[in-house]
Image (tube, rainbow, N blue to C red; front, side, top):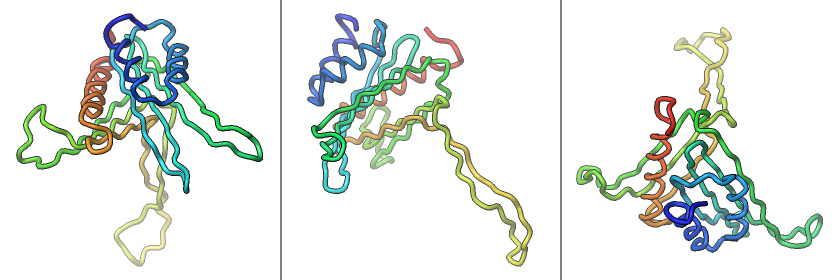
Length: 196
């Protein structure tokens, strides 16, 4: 990563998250392959799995040619198979020309008073590049309640390889702004099939 700019800020945010920063940084270094960071998001979240608190971090990095997705999860010891706690780190590097959708859903409270640049309560960023596709099917029908004909199936196909949800209440306004900035940078980088 570069010695100034977004690369240094990324390192600082990884350290600040406090979530296995050495593991996260090492996984990113491998995936980045020396490319400089143009924009990024560090999203640390805690979830409950039954009675256990599990932490997870997702880091998204935009370079001039790729989208890097890094996930780090922690796992508790399991007497049967793993005697000590462990973490898993996975990265995926996606060429920008493969990104085919960038969906940004904003939740704005008091919409009548909202002004450009004003607060956003929640953001969901969904990025698709064709690695995960889901098809939801249901039996098709017609308006005739007595019809017994087979009308086949109807459904929707969705491409949602990654979805990140942040909120002002849970993550802070700075993280919400960071996700919006990243979404704008990724949209610009993937617009019209040309990349700078």
